[in-house]
Picture 1 (cartoon, rainbow, N blue to C red):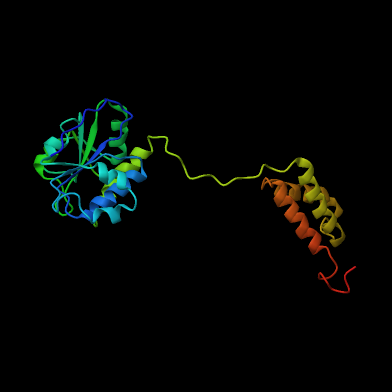
Picture 2 (picture 1 turned 90 degrees about the horizontal axis):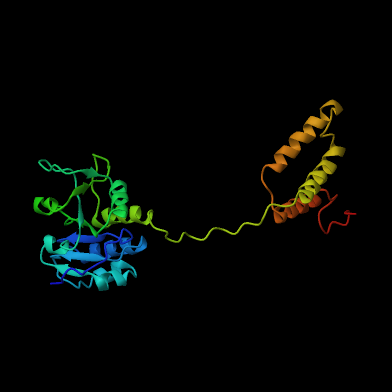
Length: 254
């Protein structure tokens, strides 16, 4: 049996994830994967049905080995949360239990702002947490869910809380696509003049009384996209090609 470790009471410490009597190694692995995706690494197991370590957990963790390697095993839930100042139980609202009921978002927001370690309890896959486990918690975390199909698996429940935790942290985001800066005004004017020069002989700006309005409208349309220089060069290449008299390689082309 592992003993709770002494930790600094810091609001920057991720909550401990406690899986109470988990049944399948695959589900433990999937929960570990969900944790590491969103910056959580401390996993505690209470009486895992098939013992620990479990060979089925590794493949399901898909590389979240650091979570599995550091996982601690306890004989009861009370021991698993003995060093935690704040305990939350994930469960549906139970009759006879008068505890605050929070969404994952509200619970994590509270955890991120309070001093001391926090733990989130998740129950066995089939039955969920029992009343004795829930009694250890200061509040209940319940997910708003379709009442006609309220079935979440263990990893899904963990990932909902882990994702909310990630929103309170400065995790790196996927790299943004590099964008070229907007083209200078002179390049945009060149594009507009190019288009106008091609439209003029086709009678596009007739009647003359409407010509100024038509030109302004055309400029407005072409100004909105914030073209970069590469896009303007591409469009002018298209216009040049359209302005040729024949196909490339056509002997009739001048």
